[in-house]
Length: 345
Ligand code: NAP
Ligand code: F7E
Image (cartoon, rainbow, N blue to C red; front, side, top):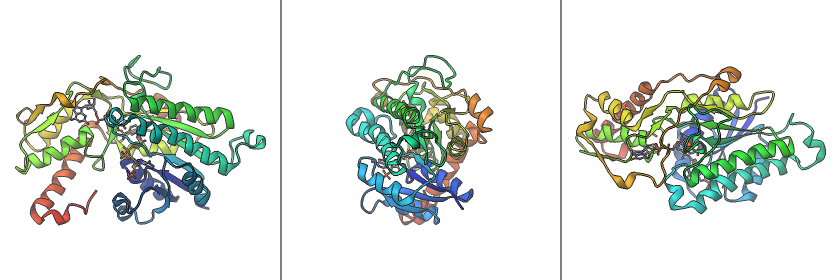
């Protein structure tokens, strides 16, 4: 019988790649969607016709219990979050509710539906619903060592990072308290042509496409010196799935082990279309964060050894993929009008 998976955050970047991956492995996949007439639900259902949907919101405990009960999943992937770090300074309470208490609510829904409060169920995780939590390299923040491993201490620098740290520890606590198979993937930045336009890589690839076509002149950026370990989202969802297939639940760091600056992203992206980034990028001090994460680099030795995971797309390949996708889409819109703008991701 095919396995059943429930994904929160299905309308986001990772949700769509994970759903495609699980369906390719023979899973039946349900995505949790919230709200009324969510346009992002239409977009993902066009992209993945075999996907099923169930209503729910990480802010609403009852809806999560109903969703888990209705789907009866073998695996739950909690990818839902407000994931743009600057928003966590603007609306810290909302981010805490969704990204922090939302994890607790999902764990509680699994516990209630599985009957994990019963002592007999505590003895072993076998046959229980397996849970994946989307933890983040933002938890390392002001890094204690480079590269970062599963044992590197946390020093988050944003409300987002602080709240993700709560989600990380509450997942570990449910594993230790109830024998739940719950794991956290500490994922470093991962990008794709489906990345939100507010994140720096996509902001750059979209601007490069517009500038190449003469539709925009300048691109405003903040801290060009920030260093990140950027990988491809399609590679990282394979690691999420592998983490739930192990005999023993444990947390893993997932990244490429290569660091680049925001300046490198701009240089490579503009080079893809034969332009010089220095002719187009302007600095906007308003985009610099109240407390910055200056540098992040993963040591994914455990994931490589124990999960057999390795990334397939390198930094230059990733930026090229994003620029080519945005240029192709911008050319279509430019030639045929805005009626086409909603067709692709
Ligand atoms: P994303 O594209 O921003 O997607 C976020 C998803 O969360 C959307 O589907 C959104 O759905 C959903 N969501 C927001 N509020 C919700 C709520 N109240 N209830 C239910 N769903 C809600 O994020 P992503 O890049 O795919 O990242 C997936 C997860 O990994 C997130 O938890 C993120 O924090 C974490 N993470 C990401 C990275 C990265 O580099 N991408 C690295 C480490 C960790 P709507 O359409 O309803 O808004
Ligand atoms: O910023 C700098 C900015 O917003 C990257 C999320 O998926 O990964 C992501 O968080 C760096 C930062 O991603 C601009 O200051 C410069 O140092 O693309 P970002 P992020 O904050 O690293 C982690 C792992 C997550 O978990 C998050 O959910 O780029 N930067 N100039 C800029 N960033 C943006 N957005 N816009 C700029 O103009």
